[in-house]
Image (cartoon, rainbow, N blue to C red):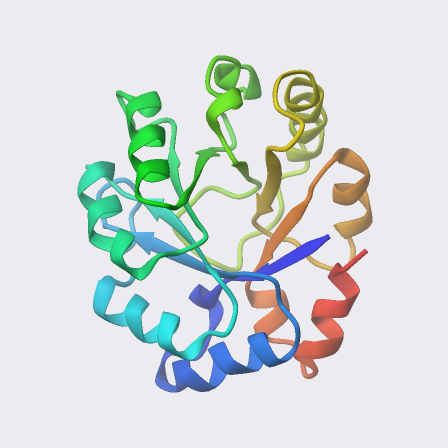
Length: 213
């Protein structure tokens, strides 16, 4: 299991310190949530702050766009050369075109599914994706409780993924902790995003290790 701590739960007064802490503790990716206050009812960070995160990080960035006008935001963050940029299928009218654009920028494209979105909607896009991010909370805020039916959704996605594009990774985001990580691994998750569980833990190294199952 790869671990991608979400900096949404970091101490923004000590952001450089917290980014360095998770990297030193052995995380695999640094997950960055970008929200515009329109697609979701929250407003987070722009390219100036994300560039500071990138400068402090020794691990690749995993940028999750929760925005309207995805193409604008892809172009905004592409110069930072993250490992992944993911966008919500529910918001994008031309997902295949945007997938191609992200890849042409040397970034691995990913699509996000909200809790209500069926995995089968990706059937004709999966072959072009490097990752699918399944939301196990409603996007917009950290610290929410895990939605249990995400497990069955991941199992269905894994069947589809294995048939079409076995190299495509499955990522989970929302309420992930030591109590549900084994269940998520067994369902087919490759990468887990975790925020409050990691940053609120007294020993972040140990917390990351509990998720690396």
